[in-house]
Length: 167
Image (cartoon, rainbow, N blue to C red; front, side, top):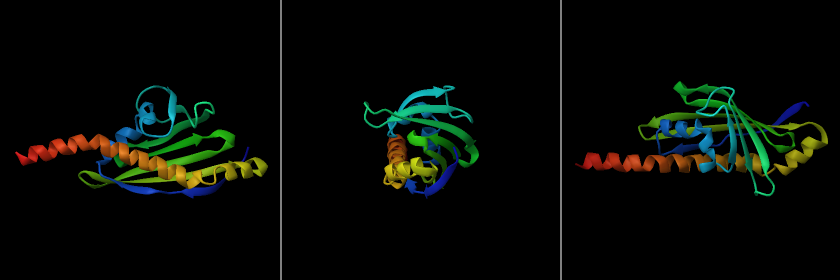
């Protein structure tokens, strides 16, 4: 089946947490269900992110079980960058390219590029129509969830650091 990329969504966000905190969330796929809108069902092989690792999950109402498959294609820990392929229902694919750029000691910018691919023909037209709102809203929501999770994870550390400087 030949795919045609029809849209790219490229949200970005400034996160009030170090890049290491965001990176830790992105590279522990078994924990993605704690903040992304996905229920992780299996990580193969288990453990932290590795090129070729596959993550299986579901989203949507529990009765519907929309299945997802993620695969790490590239991981550059030195530059906080990773690339994933995502397979969604109805033949939809997404190439995700994320990176974290340190801005200050406790702040980074996360860039998230999603290139959506749809099957050709009527199946692709139906899939594009079904995903019309999600092509932008989905990546923005995922990035927003990642931002909140990173800031929550970092907050106790920031409070301890501030307390130590006050003494």
